[in-house]
Amino acid sequence: MKLTGVNEETLWNNVIAGDQQAFRVLYEASADMLYAYALRYFPDKEMIMDSIHDLFTDLYLQRSNLARQVNIRFYLLVSFRRKLNASLKKNARFSLQADMTRAESYFQLTFEANDAQSRIIAEEEQQGALRRLAAEMNKLPARQKEILYLKYNCELSYEEVAQLMQISVPTCRTLAYRAIRQLRQDMPVTTIPAFSMLLFTCLKNF
View 1: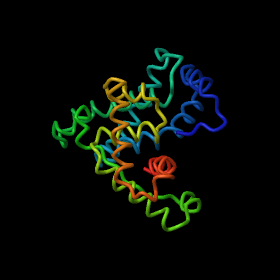
View 2: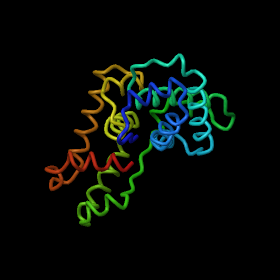
View 3: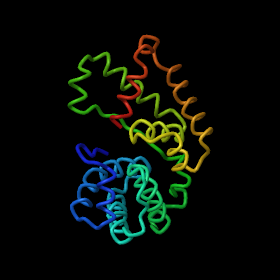
């Protein structure tokens, strides 16, 4: 979610005031993030887009009741997760196992280096290390993958990740620590000095 050159507090206040341009800016800045997050759970692109549309419709209709002091990214993710969960329960095409309250069994990651990243990390060895790290990530338990994704890709704090996933902050931190420790153990020794950079770069491309 990128709001380059935009004051988030001002933007949010304008959304609450019903400013159509503010809604457009918010949608354009956050739709891709919400879409990518939802796609980790299930491949129904149409339902995901419908849920995004419903989310922003609700934001507009309920704008006068919105809290003024919020972390926009976190607020949208929490609201969107709730919206998706409700849609899944109503959709006969999905079993109860697809409910996002049981998403720990389904969270998936896929890695693709974009053109800009390819220019920055041009060496074949480094690209290979990133793909190896991505492969090792997908061996982690789904909850650990989701925590890393929300922490590094969506840039949420541990407190926000814990609230979003409905777990305690100590549990969130412990799962993140276990995930990173496991990844460090599984990666080749030659990549360890650059592990933090590789982890951040890899998650930014999921």
